[in-house]
Amino acid sequence: MGTVVYRIHFTVEDLARTRVAPVPPPLMELSSSVRTLQTGGHPVRFGAWRSRARARLRPDARMVMDLIPPRGWAPTFLTPAEAGGARDLLERVRGTPRSRIRRDLAHVAEWHPLPPWTRGLADDPDLLRRLCDSLDHVFDVLLAPSWEGIASATAADRAARVRQALDGGVEGLLAGLLPSRIRWNPPVLELAMLSGFDGDLHLEGRGLLLVPSVFGPNAPTIDIDAQPQPVLRYPLGGAGSSDSPPLFPSGGRSEGRSGGRSGGRSALSALLGPTRAAVLRAIAEHPGCSTKELAARAGIASSSASEHTTVLRSAGLIRTVRHRNTALHSPTAVGISLLDAPGL
Image 1 (cartoon, one colour):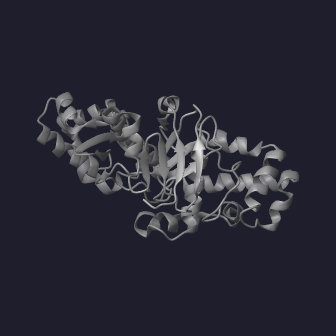
Image 2: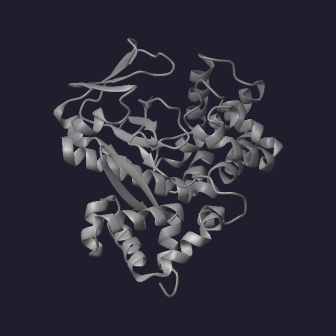
Image 3: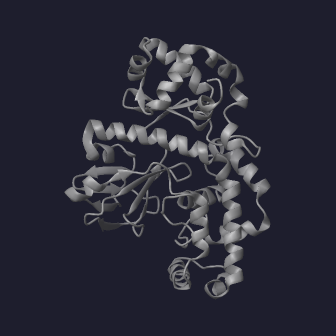
């Protein structure tokens, strides 16, 4: 870890109120995806997704790109850390008070220039409507098709974090988030930010919301103004993944639901056996279970459970993360849909 760090100060109350988000706040993750689209990083992971997104985006998407640049500040009214349904949150953006828009734009302007068209944003309802229409469109292209995959991936990561907390308490959870850039030095959490930002945050009893991010950089980011508690985002997979299927399925309107099936039909056919179906059901009923726990629940040997999870994972029906030397299994959205299908 570098010598320049951002420091988050904890009390006993803060440790008790620190939690892991079940899914990323949709508009905060949208902000990260917009930034990722505009950069060239991680071409293997994001290259095909970028190509599909750029082909589908309308010209008016530039309004969102102008306000959420590859690096630097973005107006927080566009990217709130609120949880909830994406559609409801997008609708709330349309009702942002003019004073909030002015304040957020003024803050961004202190750090980098804003495009000229933003000068009238707070006082021009038609211009704000066009920006919000653009935001809706960008969400539909960048995140909506993959949201179920993102949700299942973050659920698996959360299961690993819960295991960390069970083994080592909240302090063990904090220490294991991203050891290369996050260090627990009691009672302070030290973050090595990509920006080199230096500062102190006293939580004062609010605790911290830990948010795994699919699109976030391989470094922590902090939102100190989020309500009801500050948000620390860390890159998904810091716990270690194992043979995970792609998060971003290929084209089609239903790609968020069916992406894992087209590439794994031979593996899916193996699921017709009763034992493997029982293994999948056990994982769905007990997400985050270890291979040993899975074997006990399914009434099979650990070696057999390991073989079945390998097939299920290659079919895109489960996701596996590692905590220390333990493999933890959770269902994907495709796996749950398959179990819900008639006849299974």
